[in-house]
Length: 147
Image 1 (cartoon, one colour):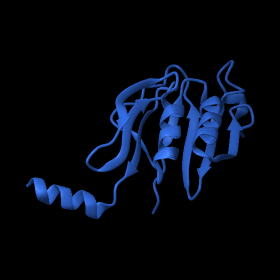
Image 2 (cartoon, one colour):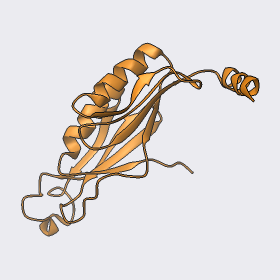
Image 3 (cartoon, helix red, strand yellow):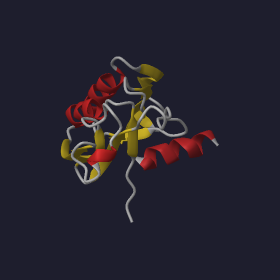
Image 4 (cartoon, one colour):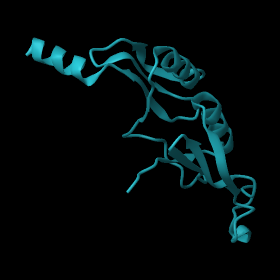
């Protein structure tokens, strides 16, 4: 079994997924508007060009998304998307991109578990954590020393 986040947007799904593709190095491999769907006649007025379903591939992981009508949209809460990045340079670039025009919830900095870690909410309202982890052995060794 695999799990994938399915994000709901306030009518800007296509813009958000293009931004994630550029910022995270992925590509949009599928996109269907409400007007292209088999039941297009059921699309709410003004929603024919909004995204009914889209898929962004990030290597062997995916982010799915859609536009939620105003009566069904809820601001994200209770989760963060985690971008685990191997180099501090890439992690910093990704954190800067995701936090631009959003909010920084925890500054991007070194922690006991990561060379760099930060939390932000992007301009689309999606909460992110960007992590450039230290080796588990180093984290475990540090934990034993402080115990």
